[in-house]
Each structure stands twice: as C-alpha cells, then as structure tokens.
Image 1 (cartoon, rainbow, N blue to C red):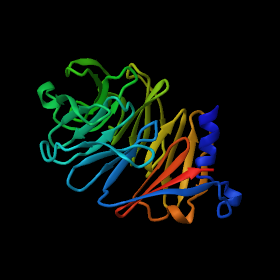
Image 2: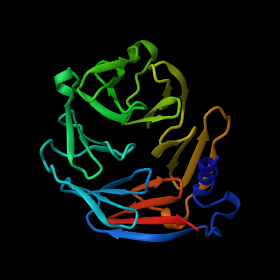
Image 3: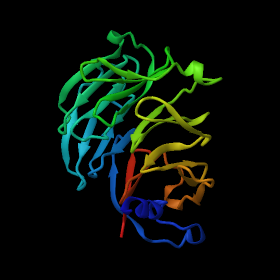
Length: 269
C-alpha cells in the first residue's frame, strides 16, 4: 500500500545501514517567525500557532489562507486537531472548551464541556464519524460527543479495567481503532465502541502518531515504528538535520521539523 511504502521512506528517508548517506529527502521550505507549535492536515496545509494564540493556516506553497484570531477568549490554545480540514478542532484545556472552525478558520461551533459536567479533559480527537472523542479524567471514561454537546457513547470506567488509570494526552482515531497515548504507560487501543483491544508499552515517545496501523514516534535521537500485531519495533537514528527539534511531524510525503522560531519542511524527491 502506498502509505506504508512511503512511511518506510519517511522514516526518515533513511535506512539504518545508510542513515547518514541518504539524500531522498531535501529541505524544500523554511518558514521563520514566531512559531510555538504547528500541525499539518492531509492535503499539506500547515497550521502555525504563535505565542499570542494566533492560529494561521498556510497552503502547501506557504501562502496564508486563513487566520484564527479568537485571542484570549478562552485562555491558551492547548491542542489543534486537523484530521478533517473542513472541521478543525481548537481546544482550550483551561476552559474545557472546544471551538470548531471551517477551512478558512472561521468559527462554526463552540462546545463548552463544563455544561456537560465534564471539567477535566486533556485529550480530545476527531472521531471516525466526525463527532469528537474526549477522555473524561474525573470519570475515567472515553466518551464520544456530538457537535451539540450530546453524549453519544462512552466506555466503561477505566478504574475498573486497570490497576492504574491512563493519563493520555493524545487520542487518535485511525482505521478500526482509537488510540490513547500516555507517555508514561504506553498505548491503549480501543474499538469504536470503547472496548479495550490491546495495550502496548511504547514509553516516552515524543510526537506519537498513527498512520494506518503503524505507530510512530521518537525518543532520544531515534525514530521508532511499531506495526500493530508484530513483535519487533523498528528503530532508526535521526538525521543530523532533525536533531534538537522541538517537534517533528511525519506525513506521507514530507517531514516537518520545528526548531526555535523556525519550521523546516523536508520533501521527498
């Protein structure tokens, strides 16, 4: 499959035996300025967050196509989910509020989780059916809610399932499963009905992501990839250009590397 083939290249345009010699990825774009975080959607649009909570959307050519300026309305932006570029989720953790914006970053909906009696949420993510997954920390449940804030479904109480409940900071709905990543405990994998299917102890991974059934991340100076159901974890050293990165995001045809006030885009030849 094309995605999996490219992922093996993206890791990261390197084979372990030829880590320093590989030139299949080249620096194609550099964006500098006040950048504290970023993400990329599946069409190559880049979303840049600055220290003033302004979210700017650039197309793949680097042209600005939208600015979200609801600055300080709900405090600091904690997380941005761009799984669906037509329905971007902007999450304010301190106010337990999700703002939905369209492809031009205009506000289309706001969900105040506190009105649902949900007061402590760190991880959210877009669900397979375009609703929203959240992890309610006080009730220790994975919940799926609608745009109107209604509760659609929820898991069992995690305190009944685990000796120590997870504290995830990422929820990724990919393929048939929902992945909750806790950097200190690993990956909890559920089906779309909230039933636990697996747990994998992938600890201390930065930039955790899932593409198809491959879980990817980095730790120290290495990239890691784990394919669900396999026994081994692939490991490859970071190229020198990627060292000391604040954040790295891998897509099917590029690698995005954030350093201080600088975003570098490495494209595949």
